[in-house]
Image (cartoon, rainbow, N blue to C red):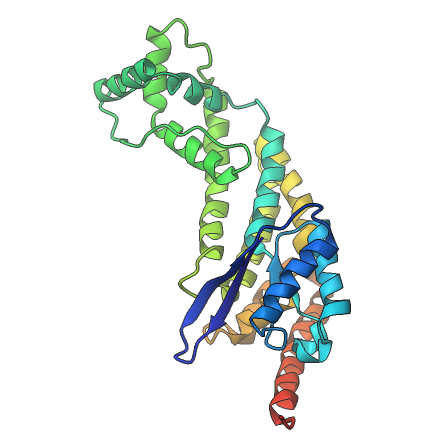
Length: 316
């Protein structure tokens, strides 16, 4: 278990430090995980200094957070008595959404097979590089084979392979053993999929930044993803429509009700304030928008009152 602390230091610099990298023996149930986390928090005297906790999305982690809130921590020490304590990892949710969409592709695009063939031996790699020189290909990247559990590697594989399309075409005419050359339709699908994955790739990089604040970006980017998915599902390419439908189902499972802190963080950004929330929420929620806007606004007031009461309370 890796436990990382994120905080603002006395000089108002964003800090991120690994507090503990602990071996947690099986079984990895909620009580074992909660015990390991609590030990770390108490060792660092952080139990009264927590704002939120972010974990990957799984039922065990959800149960662990519930145990932590109900049995291990004093809710009076937490913001809004723990109402905003549990924040789902945005990058992990993004990964789940994209993985769900990629399941639809299956073997419908042979680009993966083509890449695997040409990186299968040193001799083939050399022949591929020679063919690239002969067609004056301006791309100098190495072919990359994707890792099934890392969707971003699928995007990088497609992006690079598309740049080498002419090279694959030349080799299909000269190598009789090369049977996995994609059809024009498959190349077109690969280009469409790569174009859609680009959005998720760049947003994931933004979400994963550690040297700059990212919380105020979440609300905007989550809304942007929702609007793009709703547009893509209407596309004429049936593969893109099917992929997007699968992604939308996963999106609704995790993000249909946007975490209240995402909106609050956007409001705290002086570039956005309340205007951004008032712009995006009508596009996302339609008729329910007035209730959602009021929820975000009320949460800002509640947070202010919570901080004020804690600061004015007598200290030992």
